[in-house]
Length: 508
Ligand SMILES: O=C(O)CCC(=O)C(=O)O
Ligand SMILES: [Fe+2]
Image 1 (cartoon, rainbow, N blue to C red):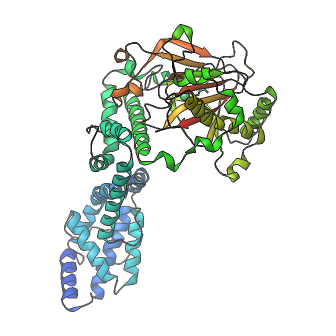
Image 2: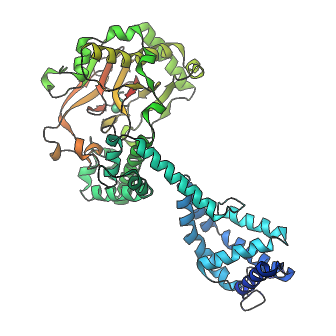
Image 3: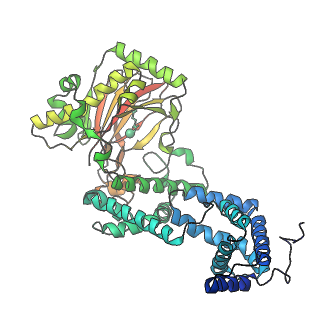
């Protein structure tokens, strides 16, 4: 132990009453510019060393780092939760050195340190070390600039919310229990409570019982059938948190900022493919499935590309897989599926996509414009499609499947409007991996608690009818298009590896 005995229990002793000494030194400095004494510097040094030792506690350090990581984007939240946590560790040290407890002690210490730094630069360094141990920048920002930063972040959020159309921000407001027409300020004020709201929603759903939560087309898959209550609560909460986050980013990310007009991707192959039947099946009165006449919004096209082009694309996909570029899905709803995103925005990005796949992607990217022009020719009301030129290549092996879901829940979580799939498999009966399309439930209120009918989206709640479905084989060259916000679907487990390309076409 060093001569000063820092860290030891020294009360009462030379270090007691630092609060009073700091106050007096601060007064003397502001009254007649008097600098603090060497003796006071020594006392301050001892205080900071004692705090350093206290902050080194491994549990405390772990907790501080956990807080920092979980509030990485929310400075204010981090600071307000850090305060009480640090206070616990500071309390015995403050008491030992005769500083007042809590926030008063912190302020006095900070003022004292600022004063002492004028005569002893090592004190400034020491204070910097301490701030680093609290995951704070070494130099303290003055409080008014922290407040200003928080205010301007709030105003930016408010502005973004205000520029979203009412039918986009209304559902977000309702998800936070505000009226549909709540003001952007009210919505912005509710956002910091996102985690709490997710917790409430999770509790509400948990109260309905496990059977309402776990199962085909429900919130969680069968793999969690035997999970503990705590784990289930955690998973459901996580699901709602992600869902609310998605809703928020949907509101604050204008569609135009990351998509391009469909016409930019026009291609003759697609124009030839999209017929009267296709457009009627997707958006009009066409019913593709005779025995499931209430399953609408689905169009199917077969033999759209040559087997040769598809086999080249499959080889390229196998190479991407070998190179480790095809990674596992993080979504608990499609366990085991793996995918790679093919980005086709810039010339640079396009060059990175292997040629056969690029050819297929360009064809798919031409479909939205073809759909729009056909709809125009038939004077059919169609959504204002926009293209985000990113295509997902996904593969399912035995053991992988995708539970019943919709690709967008009424457009509140993302802007997907039409899902376009192209299958790349030499499929034989018995190979599995079918795309299962469900008819809508006749009485939605009585059926599943899947996210779309969770109460978050009451105005457009639909549910799948698990008894009435059609299975589509993922045949080589088959294109399936469907309305992302309406069609409930699932991928059945395959017996052989199965590949598909997916383009999600966006609209507000
Ligand atoms: O690959 C399929 O058939 C459909 C996959 C799917 O539903 C999805 O990725 O959302
Ligand atoms: Fe899907």
